[in-house]
Length: 61
Image (cartoon, rainbow, N blue to C red; front, side, top):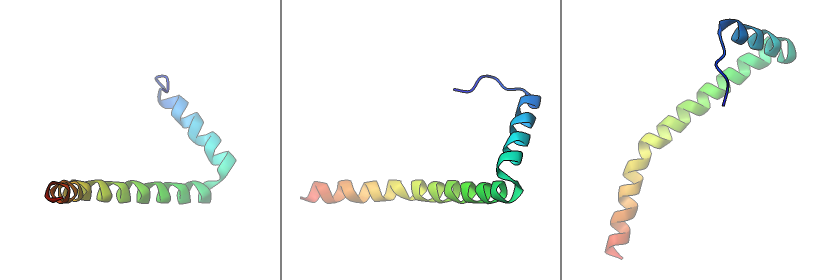
């Protein structure tokens, strides 16, 4: 996907992103990305119980 990027390449990418989007938008993006990851982990951890209920209901039918 991405080639092996060293430390300086990541610094350059971060500086360009900061120039293009500004600090406030990047901070907001990071906050939203963290919330999305947290919500995804919570939903996937609840999914095995939901799948067990579905298969048990299907077995009775």
